[in-house]
Image 1: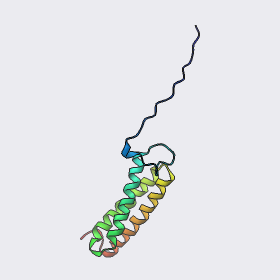
Image 2: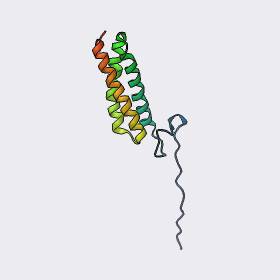
Image 3: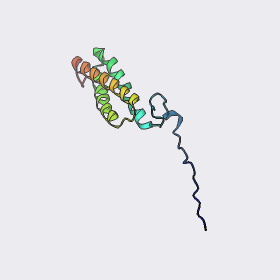
Image 4: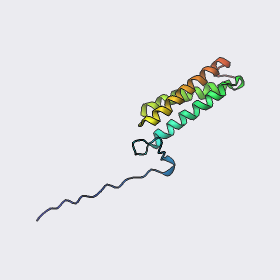
Length: 110
């Protein structure tokens, strides 16, 4: 009895449409968690930076900057592609500047 091996192509599992960001998925594979963390780091950093420009928003700048800063470090640790890492660094720096300005204007408490 001759045994034949049958080669089948593995099926590709597609990520949901909202998780596919072609600019951040430089390797062609979807990374929904890493993309989400990178975007969250960037967003928190930008908001913290903008809030840090206004002395009355020092509480928001300090807290959002601190969360964005430490969350950005974790996001950088688990990142998979270079564009994710670049977005993380921008977010981490913006978070640091935001938290520094928030502390300068009054700190974490109102």
